[in-house]
Image (tube, rainbow over all chains, first blue to last red; front, side, top):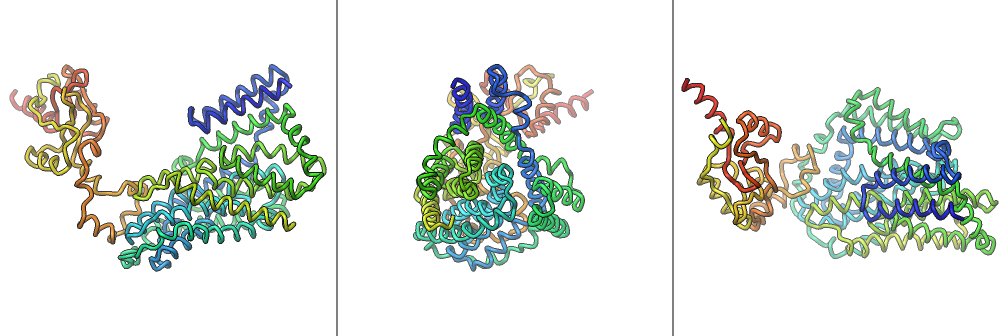
Amino acid sequence: MLNPIIASTILIAALYMVITEKMDKVIAVSCGALLMIIVGQMLGFYSQKKALLAIDFNTLGLLLGMMIITSILKRTGFFTYIAITLAKISGGRPWKLMAILGVSTAFISMLVDNVTTIVIIVPISILVCDILGINPLPILMAEVVLSIIGGVATLVGDPPNIFIGSAAGLSFNDFLVNLFPVTLVVVFFSLFILKFIHRKQLSGKPRNFQAVLNIDAKKAIKDPRGMLKCLLALGVTFSLFFLHESLGLYPSFIALLGAGLAFLLLRPNPEDIFHDVEWPLLAFFTCFFVIVGGLQETGILSHLAKKTVFLADVDIRLYKIVLLWVTGIFSSMIGAVPFTMIMIPIIKTLSGLGINGGSLWWILAIGVGFGAAGLPTGSAASIIGISISKKSRSPIDIKTWLSSATVVAVASLIFVTILILAGLF
Amino acid sequence: MKAKDIMSKDIVTVSPSIGIREIYSILKKTRYGGIPVVDKDRKILGMVTKSEILSVFLPDYFDLLGENIIYIDDFGTLDEEFENMPSFELFIVEDIMKKGSVTVEEDVSLLKVVAVMKKYNVRRILVAKDNVLKGMITRGDICKAFFEENGDK
């Protein structure tokens, strides 16, 4: 009994430090990881070897590869080009701008990292709104919230999906078939919920649309040939993702292959590209793997899982609904990534117990993914989006978040609850 | 030669509460590029230069747009607001000053002053003791000291 208590204490202490920002998050989790190994070795439940095995290099490789491709693509000016072109299509009308930019952000987030998307699209959107003299707030909310929701659709859309895919051995196409349709529906109805919530702010009359039309979007592309080459590399990467199961290729291998191809075709200065890679994030994930690995070795997580099985025996649909809401709520509070890592061993145990585990993985992905929009702490995209909005005249404050994004998150979880009741999940 | 030998002692300073328009007229009158901001005990709070004044014209998020600014010629409504109801009038020194300042002690050598200026890429440096302002040295002061001393020989 002692081991689980000590291991849980280390995990909770590390999470506490991360959430309250009392310590840099990488330092907090690396201390936690080291402590877990030391204590685990002393008490005999964990070892250096087990800690190494707990690190999922498939996940890390996939993240690294996608970060590299995104960094190279970003530098060609592709995302800015897209954002300006879309703003022109909108005709300057606030609702159209919100719909076009929001939905496009959702789609881009299915392919590349949310944070990169937000960092580029949000400032350009604020500028376009300022040129038009309209309130940027609804557009920013749509971009941030829909990027979080959009990420649920694919294996590579969001780190939690990468973890789940790797741990459960689910392929890119599995994700696409099971999550893309529901995500697409949720993206569109979230957009309309946001339209209703922000209807007043969307009523502004745009002026000076000609100034937006005058922006030469092509000039945003710093390296036109490079952009095409990089899109080619991205295309090859995603084509291989579609085929990875039948080809027997690991997603991480494909992502790194794509990154290598982009490097080869564009020959950027690797130092610049590696500068863009979020090493602290990769270090955070690595350390968190070690911490959760230790907790798992104490047996507490599978014990927890077994304790809940009776509910599944009573009614599997009820079990899924509880799982959905618990993951949604915790994901919004402690962050989608840490909570997914904790839940993975639990779901694994449940699958092992012969519960119709297949769909539990999807419930987990949806719960953490949609739930992450519930509070600003849920995902990195919201934290970054909010901090950028503070530099504009319409900062996103916690009240705005609760009355807008939280409503969307709750509505989308209710929608999925209905799908579960209807037997569709 | 030491810093104190070439610094100007008689320098104009401002308090953090004065308005941006007033700063502009002081800069124009004194032909200084930058003015130290001090409290009532002449403790250094910061520095306000022409580039700080220029930066209030721009919305905060502009620095996030990076190179994307270069090919946008017409800022539409933003331009109109800028010309018709300038909100920058409301700024006071405290809002815009660069907090803290690169300082040297009175007794340091001129070479050190040059090295510190280069290191922090500043055009002028404050001379202080215990953070109390004693004087200011500009790039011109240093050039003058070197060239005119050598010329005298």
